Length: 184
Ligand code: GDP
Image (cartoon, rainbow, N blue to C red; front, side, top):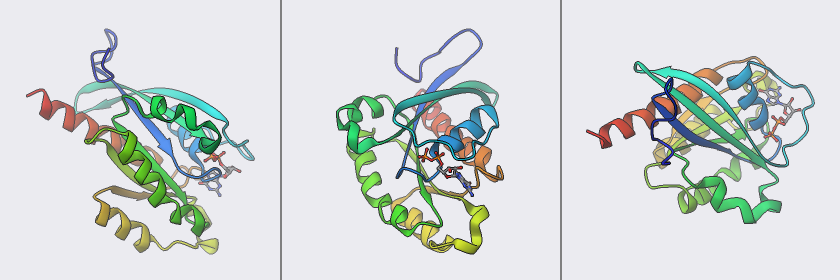
């Protein structure tokens, strides 16, 4: 079944999207905020692959979003192509308090472009916006990079639940619009 095909009687579409970014930037917590509205303090770094589902209504369609999360990606190179297979969207996450995670965004984007489809929707997410006093990456730097690369951009806080819903919604709406244009 193609990932964007009708999924079950209740859902109009199933979309697969992936989260990428350095370990510790908050990917697991962004997913649990989005799928269960939870935040895990001192959560353990993700090892291997996990995914979460959430049904969400976009433009009158019920969409089942299947969000894949991985870390330790370096240790799991063998899974790379299957991780990206069929993914229509990606959230590329860095930590605004950690410059190195922003520097690595370029590497992650390269990987997304290598393994993801041409039309993959990418949202660049600067997480931990609640830690403004420890900020190492200015908002303008993130926004500028996203504009140059044609990505959507948002700063989020999984801890304070700021912009998390909006970031996922933006990605899912864009995927929906690309798919419905194609099927016209
Ligand atoms: P992952 O390895 O990218 O999946 O990152 P995690 O979701 O496991 O988060 C790594 C650490 O950052 C954990 O200690 C989280 O509690 C913390 N964290 C995640 N998101 C936020 C956030 O928005 N604000 C703050 N202050 N801490 C966060």
